[in-house]
Image (cartoon, rainbow, N blue to C red; front, side):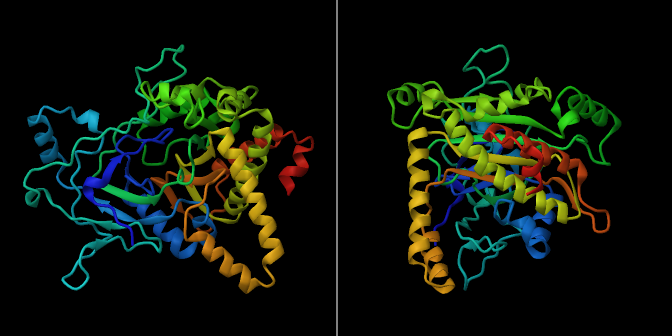
Length: 410
């Protein structure tokens, strides 16, 4: 079983929005992100009682508890390093509620989910000899001072570091991509829960009123889009200045209104320099729309309330790789149809396919459940569903569909 240890964690480089302090293992297979007890509970209940919902979420692998953050920051300061530079890497990981260790079992193993990738080395601060893992900054995170473009690109992409020592361990939605393009769509017109202060309610109501959150029930919260192909001279030059990605921060999506929000989606899907044109946008829009429809139907059958949840969309940002991946998918589908003589044979084929990570054309998941709860007896979450339906409608239009009403009924 593959493992990752405390000094194997690096800053996560593919977040389009959300809080700071998100980490990943060096293999990129998991994401370690600050969380609240409510979010952990929501994931655990989804796995145990709401399998259709769980299918639309990243795979939940367990939780981690960070060690004494203040003590670690003191060591960094003493060494002359800037804590902000090593976002989250100042954390020393200790024992967690999701891990166990005994003389018989050896190192602690994340035990909350069926997938692997989960051994965590417990090295409490007192036992680490005061030695921190080497500072490591993910060069694929474009810096905020990299581009001046009327406040549109390289604006603040992330919120403040969540004030908690608890982290949730999830599968990485960007695994399987050569150049992952990431789009974060924040759901809901009501952006606060009942625990929010009056000041916060007023501030978030203003955000909703001045964006498509109010009119459409969603807004573009952030995007990270490759501007070049993998291995090209453009990428090699861009690596020195930000890895060839353009980051659209939280203010970018707030400028749109209902009549022009499709322009934001086109900015995400189309980049001629990376080999992504309007024809490819239509193919991706059709595929992603199918996943959004699945999410919409699931939510219509569930009774929950989510404030601040997002739909995270990832597509392959290298046009050449994307076309090759789509061709291989079509070939594999044809092969399965020709070779699978019965359900048992088909199951065996699928198990073989799952043993290694295959290239992906796209991925869609629901994320961010810090303010989510199950509400039996109260019906579906129409605050969230309004946004999901409008995303679905826009994708149908981008695909070139003419009968939007009939598409939405399917």
